[in-house]
View 1 (cartoon, rainbow over the protein chains, first blue to last red):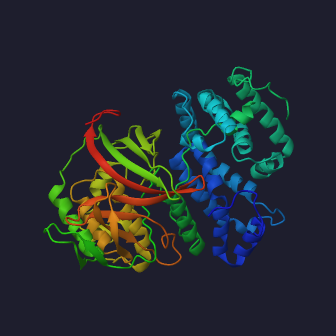
View 2 (cartoon, one colour):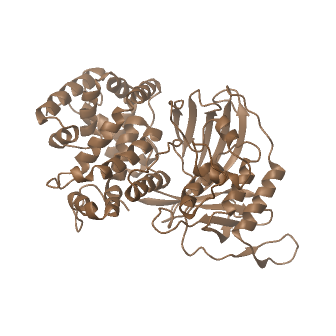
View 3 (cartoon, chains in turn yellow, red):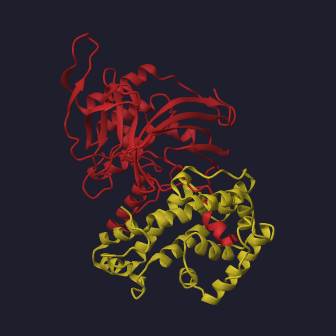
Length: 205
Length: 311
């Protein structure tokens, strides 16, 4: 149904699909099939289910409207789509803040049902992450929106620095500095040390 | 593990993308691709498993094995989707009890969902209890497949489907001929003189199916919804259905026109084979590379004064 991100064997690039949609609008649906899951997951983590549905749907209708502006020299459209999604999420700042505050108050939850399908070390990682979910939510809530955008495009949308820069329309250096500050704040909120004690914090920016 | 890795692992209570949400979003894109300026986004409730009825194209047969309580072996008789849905409406009118919730109260619902992996494996049953604010002014507490979350009150201008506010449900006509027109123009003043056209039915059908998923409705609205659904082109009878306990039932599915997201799928409304009483819904869910068959039904619905209070 939906292609795995990055799997492009025997597939046209996103850029070719977009270019084709210039003449055949319905071709654009291919882009939805490829990326709807990832965009929805990103939006759902930031805003919850209700707004995520809207943001995901609107990301693709907006992208469709803007398809003639896409630079087809860029093969993958993920940064473009996540940039649109992030802009749309920006309209929900208060809802995001409310959600993060609510998550910050809720008791940290046990891992979900999906955990049993994961490998053991993934489960361990998830357990740890869910256990400090409250602290993470509080830390995210306190970040300036532009820092949060960068951090979550990297952490949740899985974009690299260049892609995040393209998504937000800012220089790569700006992404680096915002990410550095955001990570420091989150690290502080977690007590300034690695809560998992699995290994020491690495300075790998 | 550093803070970035922790963030990556933290799911932030995010629900997975359901087939229904995907279909609705895809439909919005389809609409935009056809008429880029005319797409009217409609906000809907969180976490709807519902609403989008879909169908196997082979589901055209209308001969149904009906077990009649006569002591004789079951015999075959032909029923139409309209017969089943009108029968369901009559049964609902006989059984339904009017409720009049106050604005400061909550609608409590308990839904049971049994999931079975298609590729084999043990079934799993979820009990989802939810409390929805009657006038939408308070936080609601919603459970889906055991995943619970607080849902904040609607923001100004935000619309949900089915409507979260009882007052909005009360505004809907209980006349089965007017209901599809009101749903076609939801959010506006309906023009009852203008009949529903072929292009309107997929949208109307989504809204009708969505209404049926609301566990509690004002008196007369559910029967009207069944009767309105009987008029939707593409609604078919699917024989040989059973409820979660294996009792014989009759299925009703919607087959959308080509080019809509509803030409394939699995949602079936199941009705008692004898009385046509509505029993529940069969559906499919894809998650983590697996497909699950779902059977869901509403076990309880009531008005309560506060969240976490049970009738």
